[in-house]
Every structure is written in C-alpha cells, then in structure tokens.
Length: 122
Image (cartoon, rainbow, N blue to C red; front, side):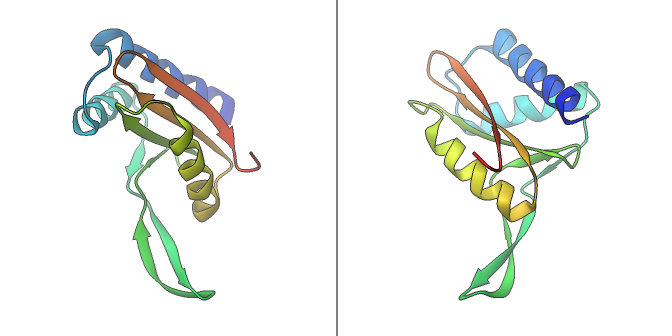
C-alpha cells in the first residue's frame, strides 16, 4: 500500500521534472508539485501540524515545511540546493514528529533533480 503510493508520488515528481526541468525556486516548484499531485487525484496536506515541546512539555503546535500525501507519506522539497542532504535530515525529524514511517526527499536543483526515499529508522 505504501509502495504503490510511493511509486505514484515518484512518477508524479519525475513527470514534473520531465515537463518543466529544474532551476526554479521553491515557490514555483511547490506549485508545480501540488498541481501534479492533484492531477493524479492524490490527497495531500501542506504544512501539517506537529506537537511542539519545551523541556518535555507540549506547549503548542507547529506547522512543518513539508506535505503529507495520502496521510501516509511525507514529501519534503527544496529548490536550487547543492544536494538532498538537508531534506533527508529534516525529513527524518518530521517523520518522527508526525508518527509516519516513510518519506521522499526531493531537491529540484539548478540542473538536475534528486529523489531519495527514506524511512523513519534511517
């Protein structure tokens, strides 16, 4: 079930790259990605809320800079970065905060796009 959704997300992102290439900023790539997910009839939540803690006490909720597709897979993106490493680190933290198991990190770089799937135990 997660695998099928992950493959659909990957194919959607690959199509976006094939159609539009890279070299765009985060605002443009985010809108293109949202349009692609809608075109595939995938439900997603932008900036999901996670509990915020201070010294082990929940104090509020914070919006995370990612999307959750189908309630199961986190997608974290960046644009014009050198590599995907920062997305992977943030993504693992976000998985834990949202109690999810799988994510996809995507960097729409200056000349190429990098997709990396990851697990909460990574």
